[in-house]
Image 1 (cartoon, rainbow, N blue to C red):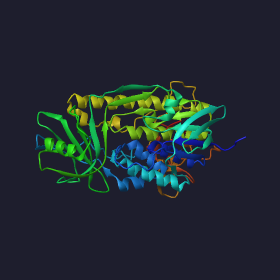
Image 2: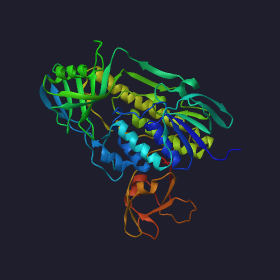
Image 3: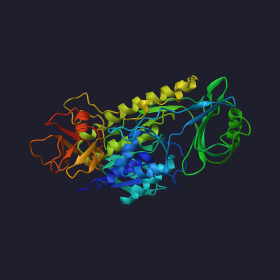
Image 4: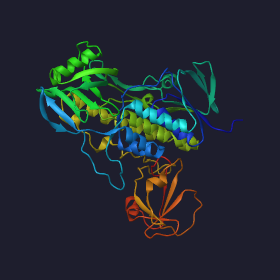
Length: 461
């Protein structure tokens, strides 16, 4: 009889990598397979939202992400070839004690994936390229999978993080509900542009329609920009010549000379949500479960947080905990899809507010509140950060205490002992072995003697 848990993950993108790290740091055997012959090279999902930065801090990779990425830049607007001011896709917000990373960050997806792969490698696991999931079936206590290499694999759980065309989702027969609009096409990709200041982003648009144009956002680590340009219904091909023609049309000839088109794709509005995120011992996450338009920068971030939610639950293994994955994450994915779809429709309608990014895209307001007050996870708000001072007078943060694969029990001015291995006493006076922070009491609306459990994913339990 098998005693050690093992998990097979199909898909080595941000979702699969995040999940693998979550499992590996809990000493769970995990394999990550990917049908690609080489790692993805391109920017694709380059926007990282504040909650994702908090997740990356917990995973131990935030320093690398911040070092390699850049803050969201100021956007220079040009209408009909003439300067028309500057704007930001969302106002900058000052950090607060409870929200240390309130603004988005830009880092090309391939670089984010490389950082995640390095972290996973440090935990003893690597992505197996050129290895596709061919088929699988479930038994009472395991999933049996057949790989393209001819190998037969037995695992306690299988997770499909294998993208919008997910083999796992299709073989489960889960409906992928939503719409695809073939009448609208946009060319996305990475290109270098001589003549443009790389410290800024650019919005080149028609004088009579500010929303009819091309956006170029600088990418860190070189001189490339990520671009998004409408292809319309003219049958244009995704080539450097096509893109140069669009830039000349919207910005004016001679404004920018493009070169080194290293990655491109044609995007069509394809907005879909899986009817279920689980069937027995098999789960889906990321693009396999929900496909987003690029408006709002939510896709990669939602997938990472699927994985962050699922990882500790797989490690826990109890059915009452596993059963919370689908309602928690599907509810959130539906909300985020509605947000992204609304921004896309504004863009198509020519509404300039489509460029604005408000509080709702930051994903700091996600809540997993359960309508069932008797369920195992009934609160579910994000646990905030807070400054603390330990018994020796050293500065500390609540995030320092949450960090890691464990749950944390916050005890406010406790008067009784506890045997919880990760209990932290929060007092208004510094006591030996405890922490003090008046802010922590107010953030949690806590009174003396209260106890609050923080889940391993940083939400109230």
